[in-house]
Length: 340
Image (cartoon, rainbow, N blue to C red; front, side, top):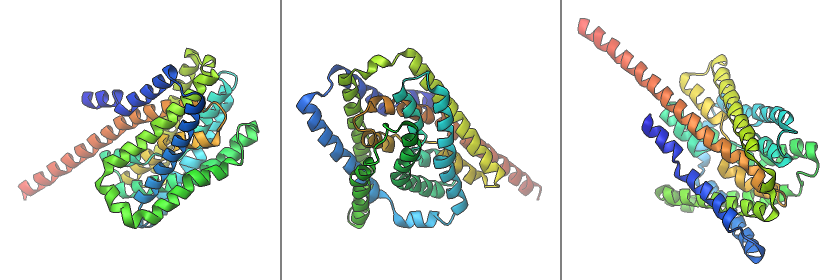
Protein backbone atom coordinates (compact mmCIF):
# COMPACT_ATOMS: atom_id res chain seq x y z
CA UNK A 1 0.00 0.00 0.00
CA UNK A 2 2.86 2.38 0.81
CA UNK A 3 4.37 1.72 -2.63
CA UNK A 4 1.00 2.42 -4.24
CA UNK A 5 0.65 5.71 -2.37
CA UNK A 6 4.14 6.83 -3.37
CA UNK A 7 3.46 5.95 -6.99
CA UNK A 8 0.24 7.96 -7.08
CA UNK A 9 1.59 10.95 -5.18
CA UNK A 10 4.60 11.07 -7.50
CA UNK A 11 2.64 10.42 -10.67
CA UNK A 12 5.07 11.38 -13.47
CA UNK A 13 2.26 12.77 -15.61
CA UNK A 14 1.09 14.99 -12.77
CA UNK A 15 4.62 16.29 -12.42
CA UNK A 16 4.72 16.98 -16.17
CA UNK A 17 1.40 18.82 -15.98
CA UNK A 18 2.72 20.98 -13.16
CA UNK A 19 5.88 21.53 -15.22
CA UNK A 20 3.82 22.69 -18.21
CA UNK A 21 1.95 25.13 -15.97
CA UNK A 22 5.21 26.42 -14.47
CA UNK A 23 6.76 26.84 -17.93
CA UNK A 24 3.71 28.79 -19.05
CA UNK A 25 4.04 31.01 -15.98
CA UNK A 26 7.73 31.71 -16.62
CA UNK A 27 7.80 31.67 -20.44
CA UNK A 28 4.29 32.14 -21.85
CA UNK A 29 3.88 32.03 -25.61
CA UNK A 30 3.29 35.50 -27.02
CA UNK A 31 2.74 37.08 -30.44
CA UNK A 32 3.92 34.99 -33.37
CA UNK A 33 4.98 32.17 -31.04
CA UNK A 34 1.41 31.95 -29.72
CA UNK A 35 0.06 31.78 -33.29
CA UNK A 36 2.44 28.95 -34.17
CA UNK A 37 1.53 27.16 -30.93
CA UNK A 38 -2.15 27.32 -31.86
CA UNK A 39 -1.43 25.48 -35.11
CA UNK A 40 0.72 22.91 -33.31
CA UNK A 41 -1.98 22.31 -30.71
CA UNK A 42 -4.63 21.87 -33.42
CA UNK A 43 -2.44 19.28 -35.17
CA UNK A 44 -1.72 17.50 -31.88
CA UNK A 45 -5.43 17.25 -31.06
CA UNK A 46 -6.18 15.86 -34.52
CA UNK A 47 -3.40 13.28 -34.14
CA UNK A 48 -4.65 12.35 -30.67
CA UNK A 49 -8.15 11.50 -31.88
CA UNK A 50 -6.85 9.87 -35.05
CA UNK A 51 -4.98 7.41 -32.82
CA UNK A 52 -8.08 6.90 -30.67
CA UNK A 53 -10.00 5.95 -33.80
CA UNK A 54 -7.25 3.63 -35.02
CA UNK A 55 -7.02 1.85 -31.66
CA UNK A 56 -10.76 1.30 -31.05
CA UNK A 57 -11.93 -2.09 -32.27
CA UNK A 58 -15.45 -2.05 -33.78
CA UNK A 59 -15.83 -5.76 -32.97
CA UNK A 60 -15.07 -5.15 -29.29
CA UNK A 61 -17.71 -2.43 -29.19
CA UNK A 62 -20.26 -4.68 -30.92
CA UNK A 63 -19.69 -7.55 -28.47
CA UNK A 64 -19.87 -5.28 -25.46
CA UNK A 65 -23.19 -3.83 -26.62
CA UNK A 66 -24.79 -7.18 -25.83
CA UNK A 67 -24.48 -6.25 -22.15
CA UNK A 68 -26.86 -3.38 -22.74
CA UNK A 69 -28.06 -3.01 -19.13
CA UNK A 70 -24.57 -2.29 -17.85
CA UNK A 71 -23.71 0.01 -20.73
CA UNK A 72 -26.97 1.92 -20.31
CA UNK A 73 -26.39 2.45 -16.59
CA UNK A 74 -22.82 3.70 -17.13
CA UNK A 75 -24.08 6.05 -19.84
CA UNK A 76 -26.81 7.40 -17.53
CA UNK A 77 -24.30 7.95 -14.73
CA UNK A 78 -21.83 9.68 -17.05
CA UNK A 79 -24.18 11.89 -19.03
CA UNK A 80 -27.22 12.10 -16.76
CA UNK A 81 -26.48 11.88 -13.05
CA UNK A 82 -23.07 13.54 -13.21
CA UNK A 83 -24.37 16.62 -15.10
CA UNK A 84 -27.15 16.98 -12.51
CA UNK A 85 -24.53 16.97 -9.75
CA UNK A 86 -22.58 19.55 -11.74
CA UNK A 87 -25.62 21.81 -12.04
CA UNK A 88 -26.22 21.64 -8.28
CA UNK A 89 -22.55 22.35 -7.56
CA UNK A 90 -22.45 25.29 -9.98
CA UNK A 91 -25.48 26.88 -8.32
CA UNK A 92 -23.99 26.43 -4.85
CA UNK A 93 -20.58 27.81 -5.89
CA UNK A 94 -21.82 30.79 -7.86
CA UNK A 95 -20.70 33.85 -5.94
CA UNK A 96 -17.95 31.93 -4.12
CA UNK A 97 -15.74 31.32 -7.18
CA UNK A 98 -14.93 33.25 -10.37
CA UNK A 99 -17.36 32.46 -13.18
CA UNK A 100 -14.73 30.65 -15.28
CA UNK A 101 -13.95 28.25 -12.41
CA UNK A 102 -17.67 27.56 -11.86
CA UNK A 103 -17.92 26.94 -15.60
CA UNK A 104 -14.99 24.53 -15.34
CA UNK A 105 -16.64 22.52 -12.57
CA UNK A 106 -19.83 22.20 -14.61
CA UNK A 107 -17.84 21.36 -17.75
CA UNK A 108 -15.95 18.48 -16.10
CA UNK A 109 -19.30 16.92 -15.15
CA UNK A 110 -20.31 16.82 -18.84
CA UNK A 111 -17.25 14.92 -20.05
CA UNK A 112 -16.94 11.23 -21.01
CA UNK A 113 -15.27 8.64 -18.83
CA UNK A 114 -11.58 7.81 -18.98
CA UNK A 115 -10.37 4.85 -21.03
CA UNK A 116 -7.02 3.60 -19.74
CA UNK A 117 -7.53 4.12 -16.01
CA UNK A 118 -11.13 2.80 -16.02
CA UNK A 119 -9.97 -0.43 -17.64
CA UNK A 120 -6.86 -0.69 -15.46
CA UNK A 121 -8.71 -0.20 -12.18
CA UNK A 122 -11.47 -2.62 -13.22
CA UNK A 123 -8.81 -5.22 -13.97
CA UNK A 124 -7.02 -4.68 -10.64
CA UNK A 125 -10.32 -4.95 -8.74
CA UNK A 126 -11.21 -8.24 -10.53
CA UNK A 127 -14.14 -6.70 -12.40
CA UNK A 128 -15.63 -7.34 -15.85
CA UNK A 129 -12.73 -6.11 -17.99
CA UNK A 130 -14.41 -6.82 -21.34
CA UNK A 131 -17.41 -4.71 -20.34
CA UNK A 132 -15.08 -1.98 -19.06
CA UNK A 133 -13.25 -1.81 -22.38
CA UNK A 134 -16.51 -1.42 -24.28
CA UNK A 135 -18.05 0.98 -21.77
CA UNK A 136 -15.05 3.32 -21.67
CA UNK A 137 -14.68 3.24 -25.45
CA UNK A 138 -18.36 3.93 -26.05
CA UNK A 139 -18.33 6.72 -23.49
CA UNK A 140 -15.52 8.51 -25.31
CA UNK A 141 -17.05 7.90 -28.73
CA UNK A 142 -20.41 9.25 -27.54
CA UNK A 143 -18.66 12.16 -25.86
CA UNK A 144 -17.64 13.60 -29.22
CA UNK A 145 -21.34 14.23 -29.84
CA UNK A 146 -22.92 14.33 -26.38
CA UNK A 147 -20.50 16.63 -24.55
CA UNK A 148 -20.77 19.54 -27.06
CA UNK A 149 -24.54 19.03 -27.08
CA UNK A 150 -24.72 19.17 -23.26
CA UNK A 151 -22.43 22.20 -23.21
CA UNK A 152 -24.74 23.96 -25.63
CA UNK A 153 -27.93 22.99 -23.82
CA UNK A 154 -26.76 23.51 -20.23
CA UNK A 155 -23.91 26.01 -20.26
CA UNK A 156 -25.21 27.92 -23.27
CA UNK A 157 -28.66 28.21 -21.71
CA UNK A 158 -27.18 29.50 -18.47
CA UNK A 159 -24.57 31.92 -19.72
CA UNK A 160 -25.41 32.68 -23.33
CA UNK A 161 -21.94 34.12 -24.04
CA UNK A 162 -20.06 31.15 -22.60
CA UNK A 163 -20.67 28.90 -25.58
CA UNK A 164 -20.70 29.44 -29.32
CA UNK A 165 -22.72 26.91 -31.31
CA UNK A 166 -20.23 27.25 -34.17
CA UNK A 167 -17.86 25.29 -31.92
CA UNK A 168 -19.76 22.15 -32.89
CA UNK A 169 -18.31 22.46 -36.37
CA UNK A 170 -14.83 22.82 -34.90
CA UNK A 171 -15.42 19.67 -32.84
CA UNK A 172 -16.41 17.79 -35.98
CA UNK A 173 -13.37 19.06 -37.89
CA UNK A 174 -10.71 18.66 -35.18
CA UNK A 175 -12.01 15.58 -33.34
CA UNK A 176 -14.68 13.62 -35.21
CA UNK A 177 -13.05 13.74 -38.65
CA UNK A 178 -9.62 12.52 -37.42
CA UNK A 179 -11.40 9.84 -35.36
CA UNK A 180 -13.31 8.62 -38.43
CA UNK A 181 -10.13 8.59 -40.53
CA UNK A 182 -8.42 6.60 -37.76
CA UNK A 183 -11.22 4.03 -37.89
CA UNK A 184 -10.78 3.72 -41.65
CA UNK A 185 -7.03 3.30 -41.24
CA UNK A 186 -7.33 0.76 -38.42
CA UNK A 187 -6.89 -2.31 -40.70
CA UNK A 188 -3.58 -0.83 -41.89
CA UNK A 189 -2.06 0.45 -38.64
CA UNK A 190 -4.08 -1.15 -35.82
CA UNK A 191 -1.61 -3.96 -35.14
CA UNK A 192 1.33 -1.56 -35.33
CA UNK A 193 -0.25 0.65 -32.66
CA UNK A 194 -0.86 -2.39 -30.43
CA UNK A 195 2.82 -3.34 -30.68
CA UNK A 196 3.93 0.22 -29.91
CA UNK A 197 1.54 1.13 -27.11
CA UNK A 198 4.16 3.28 -25.38
CA UNK A 199 4.46 5.44 -28.49
CA UNK A 200 0.73 6.14 -28.52
CA UNK A 201 0.78 6.86 -24.79
CA UNK A 202 3.55 9.39 -25.40
CA UNK A 203 1.41 11.02 -28.10
CA UNK A 204 -1.62 11.14 -25.78
CA UNK A 205 0.26 12.81 -22.98
CA UNK A 206 2.27 15.06 -25.27
CA UNK A 207 -0.91 16.45 -26.82
CA UNK A 208 -2.43 17.13 -23.40
CA UNK A 209 0.74 18.86 -22.19
CA UNK A 210 0.75 21.07 -25.29
CA UNK A 211 -2.87 22.08 -24.75
CA UNK A 212 -2.26 22.77 -21.05
CA UNK A 213 0.80 24.89 -21.84
CA UNK A 214 -1.11 26.83 -24.51
CA UNK A 215 -4.11 27.40 -22.24
CA UNK A 216 -2.04 28.54 -19.29
CA UNK A 217 0.14 30.72 -21.51
CA UNK A 218 -2.95 32.48 -22.77
CA UNK A 219 -4.12 32.89 -19.19
CA UNK A 220 -0.79 34.39 -18.10
CA UNK A 221 -0.74 36.86 -21.00
CA UNK A 222 -4.33 37.89 -20.28
CA UNK A 223 -3.66 38.15 -16.54
CA UNK A 224 -6.52 35.85 -15.54
CA UNK A 225 -4.55 34.28 -12.68
CA UNK A 226 -4.81 37.50 -10.72
CA UNK A 227 -8.42 36.47 -10.08
CA UNK A 228 -7.51 33.13 -8.40
CA UNK A 229 -6.35 32.78 -4.80
CA UNK A 230 -5.82 30.03 -2.23
CA UNK A 231 -9.44 30.14 -1.12
CA UNK A 232 -10.58 29.39 -4.67
CA UNK A 233 -8.31 26.34 -4.81
CA UNK A 234 -9.72 25.08 -1.51
CA UNK A 235 -13.27 25.45 -2.88
CA UNK A 236 -12.31 23.52 -6.03
CA UNK A 237 -10.57 20.77 -4.06
CA UNK A 238 -13.51 20.35 -1.69
CA UNK A 239 -16.01 20.34 -4.55
CA UNK A 240 -14.03 17.75 -6.50
CA UNK A 241 -13.87 15.46 -3.44
CA UNK A 242 -17.60 15.81 -2.79
CA UNK A 243 -18.53 15.20 -6.43
CA UNK A 244 -16.36 12.07 -6.57
CA UNK A 245 -17.70 10.75 -3.26
CA UNK A 246 -21.30 11.24 -4.41
CA UNK A 247 -20.89 9.60 -7.80
CA UNK A 248 -18.96 6.66 -6.30
CA UNK A 249 -21.74 6.12 -3.76
CA UNK A 250 -24.44 6.43 -6.43
CA UNK A 251 -22.79 4.00 -8.88
CA UNK A 252 -22.10 1.48 -6.11
CA UNK A 253 -25.67 1.68 -4.83
CA UNK A 254 -27.27 1.41 -8.28
CA UNK A 255 -25.12 -1.59 -9.16
CA UNK A 256 -26.36 -3.43 -6.07
CA UNK A 257 -30.01 -2.35 -6.28
CA UNK A 258 -30.30 -3.41 -9.93
CA UNK A 259 -28.92 -6.87 -9.22
CA UNK A 260 -25.65 -6.77 -11.15
CA UNK A 261 -22.94 -9.33 -10.38
CA UNK A 262 -19.95 -8.31 -8.28
CA UNK A 263 -17.77 -8.06 -11.41
CA UNK A 264 -20.31 -5.85 -13.17
CA UNK A 265 -20.73 -3.66 -10.09
CA UNK A 266 -17.00 -2.98 -10.14
CA UNK A 267 -17.16 -2.03 -13.82
CA UNK A 268 -20.08 0.32 -13.21
CA UNK A 269 -18.26 1.92 -10.28
CA UNK A 270 -15.03 2.67 -12.13
CA UNK A 271 -16.44 3.49 -15.58
CA UNK A 272 -19.36 5.57 -14.33
CA UNK A 273 -17.43 7.73 -11.88
CA UNK A 274 -14.53 9.06 -13.94
CA UNK A 275 -13.97 12.04 -16.20
CA UNK A 276 -11.42 12.13 -19.00
CA UNK A 277 -8.59 14.66 -18.90
CA UNK A 278 -7.38 13.41 -22.29
CA UNK A 279 -10.69 14.33 -23.93
CA UNK A 280 -11.64 17.27 -21.72
CA UNK A 281 -8.59 19.47 -22.19
CA UNK A 282 -8.66 19.46 -26.03
CA UNK A 283 -12.44 19.92 -26.03
CA UNK A 284 -12.21 22.89 -23.69
CA UNK A 285 -9.71 24.53 -26.02
CA UNK A 286 -12.21 24.22 -28.87
CA UNK A 287 -15.51 24.86 -27.08
CA UNK A 288 -14.31 27.84 -25.05
CA UNK A 289 -11.88 29.39 -27.52
CA UNK A 290 -11.17 33.02 -26.74
CA UNK A 291 -12.04 32.63 -23.08
CA UNK A 292 -10.00 31.77 -19.96
CA UNK A 293 -9.45 28.13 -20.93
CA UNK A 294 -6.76 27.75 -18.28
CA UNK A 295 -9.32 28.46 -15.56
CA UNK A 296 -11.96 26.26 -17.19
CA UNK A 297 -9.67 23.20 -17.21
CA UNK A 298 -8.21 23.77 -13.72
CA UNK A 299 -11.06 21.96 -11.87
CA UNK A 300 -10.74 19.04 -14.31
CA UNK A 301 -7.00 18.73 -13.66
CA UNK A 302 -7.58 18.69 -9.90
CA UNK A 303 -10.48 16.23 -10.17
CA UNK A 304 -8.39 13.98 -12.41
CA UNK A 305 -5.66 13.52 -9.82
CA UNK A 306 -8.13 12.96 -6.98
CA UNK A 307 -10.03 10.31 -8.95
CA UNK A 308 -6.79 8.45 -9.71
CA UNK A 309 -5.79 8.45 -6.05
CA UNK A 310 -9.16 7.37 -4.62
CA UNK A 311 -9.96 4.82 -7.33
CA UNK A 312 -6.53 3.21 -6.99
CA UNK A 313 -7.19 2.69 -3.29
CA UNK A 314 -10.66 1.29 -4.03
CA UNK A 315 -9.29 -1.08 -6.69
CA UNK A 316 -6.70 -2.43 -4.26
CA UNK A 317 -9.40 -2.93 -1.63
CA UNK A 318 -11.66 -4.82 -4.03
CA UNK A 319 -8.72 -6.97 -5.09
CA UNK A 320 -7.86 -7.78 -1.47
CA UNK A 321 -11.47 -8.82 -0.79
CA UNK A 322 -11.53 -10.98 -3.93
CA UNK A 323 -8.29 -12.70 -2.90
CA UNK A 324 -9.61 -13.25 0.61
CA UNK A 325 -12.83 -14.80 -0.76
CA UNK A 326 -10.84 -17.04 -3.10
CA UNK A 327 -8.61 -18.19 -0.23
CA UNK A 328 -11.66 -18.92 1.92
CA UNK A 329 -13.22 -21.02 -0.84
CA UNK A 330 -9.97 -22.94 -1.35
CA UNK A 331 -9.75 -23.62 2.37
CA UNK A 332 -13.28 -25.02 2.46
CA UNK A 333 -12.64 -27.17 -0.62
CA UNK A 334 -9.44 -28.56 0.86
CA UNK A 335 -11.22 -29.32 4.14
CA UNK A 336 -14.00 -31.17 2.32
CA UNK A 337 -11.50 -33.15 0.24
CA UNK A 338 -9.52 -34.08 3.37
CA UNK A 339 -12.62 -35.42 5.12
CA UNK A 340 -13.62 -37.31 2.00
